[in-house]
Length: 115
Image (cartoon, rainbow, N blue to C red; front, side, top):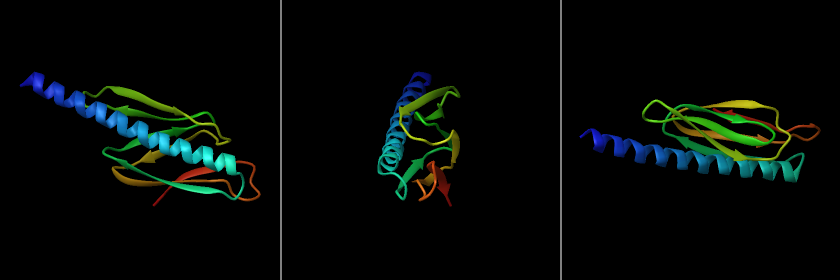
């Protein structure tokens, strides 16, 4: 049985990592779209998470230090160019709505979780 449990945990970790990479890619695309469109643009991304975590955003990437089933961590990272300041967005279990915007008259973009 221990081998079966290990195999299941490994498969779930791979699935969770791929889901997070997909979500970070969607967020990265939204950031790059807003950055490309300039002031007045806005994008909304929904991220569905199985566990609470944090997404780190910088001007060059978005990342998440994902907790695996065995308690270890795996860094999932996607590059993204923008003028965002370093930000950490807490993600709760379930659906999380992230807003990426560049307000008119502002020199920098904003990113935040709603709700």
